[in-house]
Length: 86
Image 1: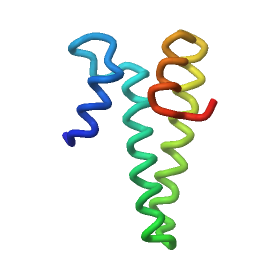
Image 2 (image 1 turned 90 degrees about the vertical axis):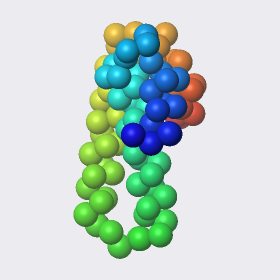
Image 3 (image 1 turned 120 degrees about the vertical axis):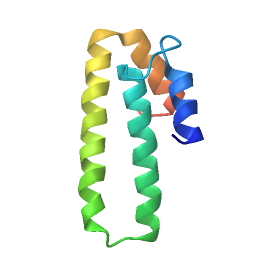
């Protein structure tokens, strides 16, 4: 596991052993999306990875909607911490 992933998990964890909460899933997807976006700056014609990026963006969108519905306070915290536009 990379240092960036560990930092994301630590910063968004609800408790010490939390590795799969909605907040962490959103954080990890955000890391993946930013990594793929950087990849596309170098490899513009990579169409296979475009599908993976679209799937990741849609999954994050669904998880954000779920979190907003279930726990709006945590939703606001995640949006602010990850610098997402909403």
